[in-house]
Length: 135
Image 1 (tube, rainbow, N blue to C red):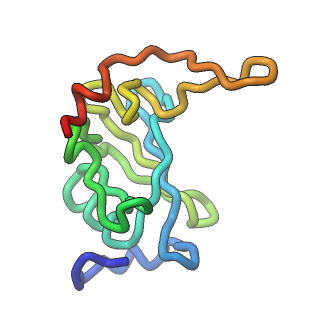
Image 2 (cartoon, rainbow, N blue to C red):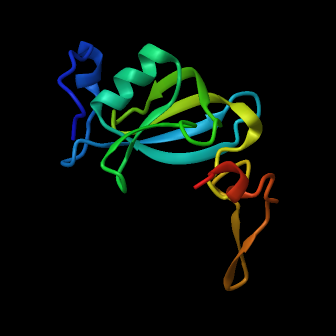
């Protein structure tokens, strides 16, 4: 799951990664406390995030490191990294550059709310994804 052999800081081994070598990482907006997204990190992603100050995740669909904003420009500047009491969840306090965290063009990936018996979008699209991700 690693892109290249990397010497990792000792503190990374204190994190309890799952059998696939991943740990969930919650990105929370600095200032508002709003949860922007949940993604996954492997050891290299976590170490690079700490070293660079920019959120780096493991893309399960691409099977490679995903540097948040590499295509969209909507990077997450990391202000603080925390580890939960069981050492199996990472919490990132981030500044969301451009105000868009979701690939749908919304501020947060958590834009669907259960209304009765169905999920309803409750947050607006801030920018058309076709304008963000030119193919």
